[in-house]
Image (cartoon, rainbow, N blue to C red):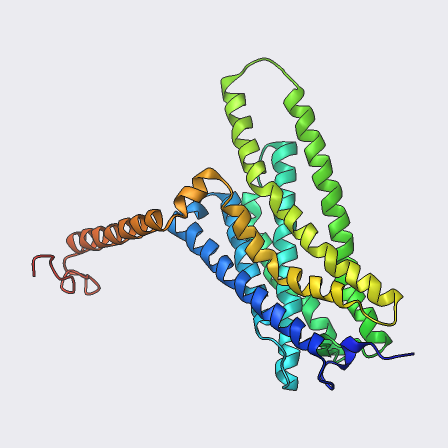
Length: 321
């Protein structure tokens, strides 16, 4: 049986391996910059005051961190390689976690007309702690290492293949199927509800309108995750069925895998309101407003606490000096 070209990337000078590394670094960097911009916008315009926006913020932070191991490129050092593999598994799972929370929140909004805001702390525990346990499992078998032109679970023996399936591909395939089924159900259910008329009630209509706005804001994020996950899953199936990996599929996977943060940011900017707020002039005005607000709060604090040693009144230079 001929050895797969992908498994020889660390030992042979193959232009395909170099191309894949460059692609992953470029798209990882692109996703990092756009994710950082999205986090900045949510902070600047204080959209984090709303629970649905905070969920998007948490997903953006996870996607920002998830782009870092892709930006690291090919690592020769063994310890650095293991760290890259762990980071990739950990932050991939944090993204899965927050996408799942967003979908669960949509389901509750549609079915019970209330959110999971009261469980926010529990979601943080689940989405940031549990991935660490899952990502730590390959360390038991020393399975992290060079996996082609990047670092992940090595795939050198049967146990590595089992770990790849148990730690990532198997659960993600199940989650993708579950999310797809749930999104189809929610879409059908909302259409049926919209066709149902039970008389006009202003308060009820207002609550329904607010609920649908929240659902529309969140609906596309699980869809983006599903679409981005499809290519890596197809690539893994192709690798399992053939002796040689398809360069085209591996290339598409190298492009799509780091893109969650970038696509989420582009999706976030699609609404008319966000397009206006993301204009440089609008951002600059908001930054100046935040600065004036901070100065006003400093003056108010100094006036209310004249004897407080932490008062900033002595450090503030008047505008006329």
